[in-house]
Image (cartoon, rainbow, N blue to C red; front, side, top):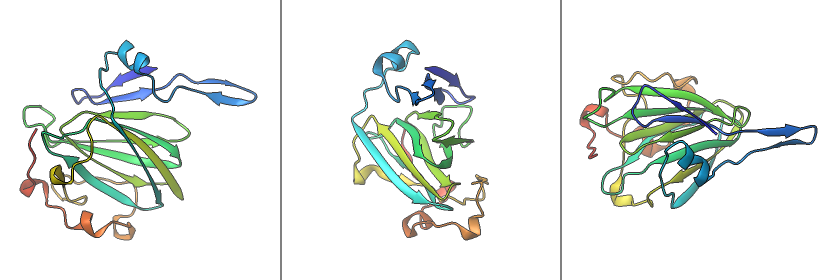
Length: 182
């Protein structure tokens, strides 16, 4: 596995090693040993999977401390544009946005540390996403930021006026009004 650092502390793009031949391919989508080899020491406790159709935007979501989550995102089918916002006030990248296309074809994974809001848009007809979390879901800790907050000016790579967005995500607070504790 190859780990690529981003300009954000602890936010990494992971590229699994692919073994392929005329029959197809094989790769380890997760290996604690491979993670330890690149100094990733995270104990994941929960897997989540979602399926969405084209033009869906999900996010921006996070859990506040003490139940903040590190997430490892990968795409099983289709393409997404994955977006994170750094909410760690002590970092020079505070309030900055990072986006990357993840797909079943490129097999890239995004390791998102605690302290980031996360969301994605679906670029293909259908996308299935699997992500690991190092903390369980706690509704009382759940929070979010409005996906189309003008302060963030996120390019979701889909037409936002045609996007399919949940009522819950449409009602999230702007970044300037959001409460986050990391």
